Length: 374
Image (cartoon, rainbow, N blue to C red; front, top):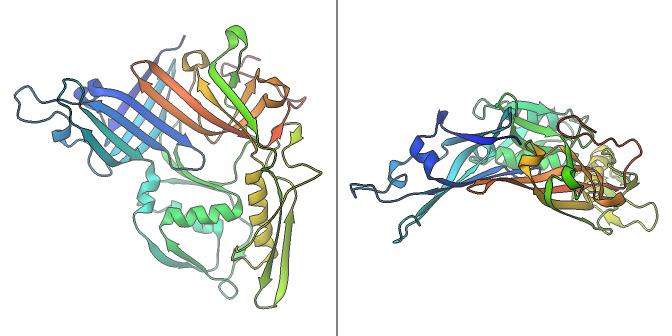
């Protein structure tokens, strides 16, 4: 069974021994739709000479201090998160050993959310805008951007940013059906700024085995199918200059279908009318409608807890994973939406939330675990 260990850096330096000894619990939330978060709980007490409180009075966790957590499972080490301190709270107790300090940190999107701006972006596509913002030296990110086709010209359309950089980028991402997030590259440890479509079709990161005897590597697993969530989308906009209707209609998801039976039904479909988009071109309306259909198609969801020691690896959000042993409908490939990593005195656990846009196991599905065995 692989050994598990972690390392914490504070502003680029290893955390002092007294900090490591005081850690009671670390939580890291890795999420596809929200900022990644890190929570530390540390024990503190009155110093031996009675002059101060340990940790609290040492001012280690200052505003926006950088915390980096790396984890080793077996022979593999990867950076789990780089985050910046946004809040501390101390619970002072009269009982020995009961005082605790909680530290909350957010991924580098917090740096992109400090300044509200009003800025115009003339003659640029959404992807060009994303590249400029994510390349800002103040954020220290490596941009990972998918090209968008529509190039808005100043003579026809003026793009105005009102809000912080991350708020603006996420609005652009939503209308293109993109993900927008900051993540540490697991190999290099460098932070990357992502602006692109979800990629559920990439190589799965492993197999979650449910109730399969000695192969079982999950402690719990539950799945559900919201049959009314998927929908087709229609929308109409008015092109101001020509005073003509611009129509768009989308009936199926463009993302890789993760099963035999798509979630969007061919019969008795639910139709959603997309309104108040602020868009006036058919191509823009089509992209917005497609984004909504893609999102609504995530109708199959699962959650559970991973046995990290048996799984032997770190499960990451924003990537696919395979599930077997959950029956003919709920086995197959899922997209990982959220992983909550918890380190405490009981060991290392990973709680996960998965989503899927289809049911059933395709005949081409091959289950390959982390070690490469089928």
